Each structure stands twice: as structure tokens, then as C-alpha cells.
Length: 482
Image (cartoon, helix red, strand yellow):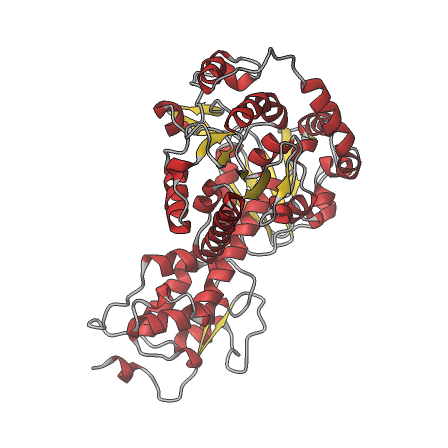
């Protein structure tokens, strides 16, 4: 008996999902339908509360009885790891068509196992976009859930949070909050359902309303003072902040009331920080060797007190091009040389492609020591603060005064601040010459480590822009050489 013998010709089938995020149920039904050769346009997938379509009528039990059953010798269903990984996330999306889309892609995978590698395929791109939206929603939930303390006479302290997810992510993120707040009794209430953790057991509850959650607690004043104390005006990027922290979440975040005032006063606070951070240095060293020796003894900022080594710039004393990064990384700290790790290798590849000889350039960093936090045996990179960059600027200026490059290429906002003494938007100033007081030019681009953190089309696009920036620098160096 073939699989088609289980299927009535011209029949339509309805699959009623018990939960909108039940991937295992969908996968089991989808596998059986593929084995029975049921084409995608013959299936209606209906989630609880969904309106369905022309063929999705009938109660769940009726729909289930109509599904064909594959024979024992039905061929196995092929699905790549990438498809399964994306499908697990995409099925949490609120788009009612996600089940049909995933089944259509699974159906097509049987004839074309490499279809997930086709970035131009419309179905693949749609699934990737759904999965991306779900990941972003989960990230917002991790970042913006704010618990409020509720005193329960019978059970003691209980923390309650209100959150409004865009997609069906509540159950999928239960483990994150259980691990992070394992010693607390807490509840997360949402319009799509609720979670309740008593320190031992996780329980699910029905949807809730905003009025079910407390509006505040005595701890919020303390949280607001802490947030104001760590708000760094020198690293403020309003557009990026609004993109990462949309205003729709502000009403649940006690610190949000401070944001307009903090933004308005950022410029003045930054100037005050710079003024307070100004340090008295001795006369500038007269040689690069003297700078090298001096930075190893420098303890003028907290980074210099960590268990690390100063990393001096390297390159010809009269290089026309100076390349400035942010700070040495773990591998640079060990090797004692700048840009020898993954970011350095990527930089070397791009420099070679652009026709720029790294050996002819002076390569250094805005901050001379590696800033990190210890996690077990690992040292995790930390971005230097504005005050730390401003403190180390003395050494970068000393290098520039000796090398006297015609063109300085700053990679990343920290490097640009190390040269200019103020924060600039890389997106706004890249690809153009910025005149410096000593007659040289500053060009700004992204740091190669930024490219390493990207994936897929975003990485390709930024790599293209980075290559274009280096090509422009190459052309400008030729013009300056006259």
C-alpha cells in the first residue's frame, strides 16, 4: 500500500493545534502528512482561537479523525538542523500563517534538501524573518521584565511582573527566568498567559490584565537612583537606545521616567566628566620606546590595575597611515602586540584586499590595557568607559606626535573618541575626512570585531561598507603621497 492510498483525492485536512506554541505537536502532524504526500495547499492549520479558513471548519476531534495515517514503511522525512532550529523559533510567532509556511518549506525540503542555503528563496527568508522577530521579542522580555514586590501575609515575599509580548514566547522563556531568579517566588503576567514560580515548581496560569499586576513598590526609588548613577552620557546614542528600548515598554520600567531628563542633561554631564577626568601628566616621552616603557607603568585608570600587560602600537616610525583600534583583547594582551586575534586577522584580510600593506602602517589602540571581567578561567572583554579612553588619550596623542601620520583611521567609536576627545556617531562620519589640528586627517569606520558579531546578510553588508571605507583610505593615501 502506498502513502497516497491513505489520502482521498481532492481532500482537504484540518489540523487543530492544542497550543499556539506547540512545536512538537506540529512536527509530528507535519511529518505524518508529508509521509502521506498531502500537498501544502490541502491542509489548514488552526491554532486555539484562530478563525481558520474555508476548509478549517469542524471541531478538533473531527479534524483529527480526517488526518491520514502513514504506512509503516513510509519514507523518512528529511529536515536539516537549520530548518528545525528556525522552525522552533518561527512557530512562536503570532502570524497565523506560520504553520502553513513551515509545512510548505518542509514539503519542499523533501525534493530540495539544500533549499535552506538559498538566501533568495522567499519561504526561507520569511521563516528567517519570523524567527528573528521571535528572538528580538525574547530579548526584550529578558531585558524589560521588572518585578514588583508584593507582601503576601500567608506566603511572604512575592514578586510580580507585567509584560506584553508580541509573540507566543512566554512558555519558551520560562527556563531563563527560573534559572535567573531561582530563589525568588515570582509571577510573570501577560495577556497571553502567566507563569508562577514558587522556588521549586513552575506553574502556568491564564491570561492576565495590566490591573492584576502591582504598579510599583518601595524598591523602585532605589532602582531609579542606581540607574541614574550608571547612566553614561558619553556613550549615549538616542536613536540606538530607542531602537533597543522601544517606548512601548517604558510604562513598565521605573527608570523610564528618568530618561528624558538624563538625555537632556547628557551633554553637560559629559563635559563635567571630561573635566573631572583630566589628569596631570609629565612631559611627553620623546621616543616610542619611552612611551612603551611608560604605559607599562601607567595606573591612572582602573584598567591599568587589572592583571594585564600594556600593549604598545607597532609599525614604522614615519608611517603615513596610523590605524587605531579600541583596546587590546585577550590574545593581544598575551602576545603583547596589537590586532593579532580574530579581529586582527579579519583586519589583515581586508587590508590586503584593499591593497594596504599593514607592515607600512602604524597600528595601535586608543586604550593600552585590556579591560575584562573574570568568569571562571575566561577573561571576558569589557568596553572601556569614556573616562578611561580620555585618560589613555595622552599616550595616543604622544604616539601621533612622534609618528606624525598623514591619515589616521579610527576603527569604532572608542577609537574616534581617543583621537577627537569627544564621542561621534560612526554612521554619520564614516567615509569622510575629518581635519585634525596637526594637519592630518581622521577617517572613521567600524571596528572589525563588529563584523565578527554579525551574521548572514547583515555581516555581508557591513563587510562591503568596511571594504569601501578601506578603499577610500587607500585612494586618499595615494593623493596625500602626491
